[in-house]
Image (cartoon, rainbow, N blue to C red):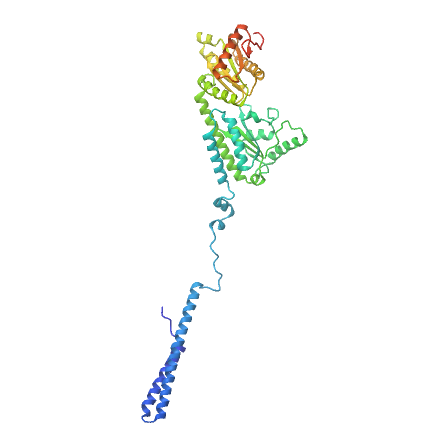
Length: 454
């Protein structure tokens, strides 16, 4: 765009042209007068000088205007403050959103770490090991690494009593039973509501139950040796609490972050339900449908693995065989409903008296075999007495069955033996117990460790 000429520039140029014309006219009129011609030349030179000065002024003004225009283009409103420098997205969003975008302090990396750890453990776990104790160990390790959590305990809830039973019998140092369970735990189990110490949603009732537990620990009047936790997570299925996770220690910043604890709780519940379904599926494949115990093939396969590991670790182990005499007569008499009921009750009774990592299966129609880990023969005999008492109580619900059946038990130490040899020894023991008319026989078949039949 052409710059407009200023009036001063126009007048100066016009004056220069006029003087030059005037000088030329003076020279023309002077004719022979040298003085007049000299004056005319001087006027012409003056006019030319003025014209040149105007041209120089115009050029200088034009350059100045171009520089000014460039300055105005860069900053069209010099009086207004310049806009702020563009900031990164994380700096301009609210703080809560920024935590998510830069992942500096949000649950996303933590949940990813938990999920990856769980999948890694599931892919490489020992499939012969009982799932619940193994899951308990993984929970303690994973929450300890990810949350710096301490004093972690996990329980299954036994129905219909609602009593929490440790997933891992080896570390059950809580002292929880029907008489010692604190009111806070009973509340969490019955309502399915999570407990976080000092959480904003805690009401007076919850705080009162927590304070009651703390006060009983301070006074030494508590019936449980388990200190009050800072976090309790009930695991729910079909509106029923099936599990409980207790965390005794958490860093203060994690304890205040209720949204993070909620996300972790949801993940733990998902893992717990996955373990439950996996165990149910494995059990359904391996169990004898009539008794609810392992089938003979699966019992033998798993027992061989456990006995080999026990021999490598120097771990004591006991094999127990139980015979229920009289069951075959029920078949011969066509009492199949009574027979099925009896087998089912016997299976439940045996399972109720064994630990979660013991093995037990139906070896034949009327024989059951159990593998008791980390027990010597003396403790094994105590378990054998409990097993026979439980079977007797179960069959007493139908007196005609208890009258026509007889339960016997034989046990031996299996250290250094394979499973087949150990079972053969206990079967021989059962034959000797029958011949001697005793209920329990242990050790070598010559050694009798129980009284005569009543």
